[in-house]
Image 1 (cartoon, rainbow, N blue to C red):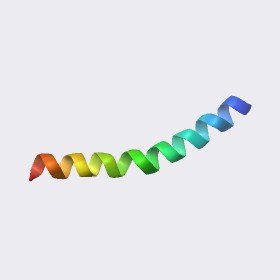
Image 2 (tube, rainbow, N blue to C red; image 1 turned 135 degrees about the horizontal axis):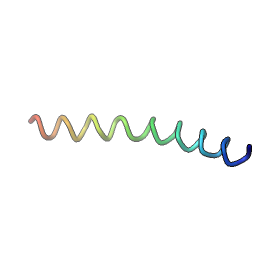
Image 3 (tube, rainbow, N blue to C red; image 1 turned 135 degrees about the vertical axis):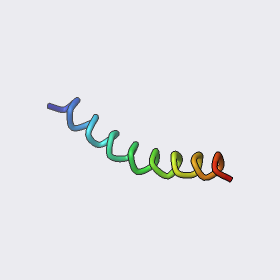
Length: 31
């Protein structure tokens, strides 16, 4: 239960930080 909660928290923060990084990388490749 505790591990699941930690993974969910890390996953949430990871997505918030990971998506902008992906967008910036795609923009660099396109431009």
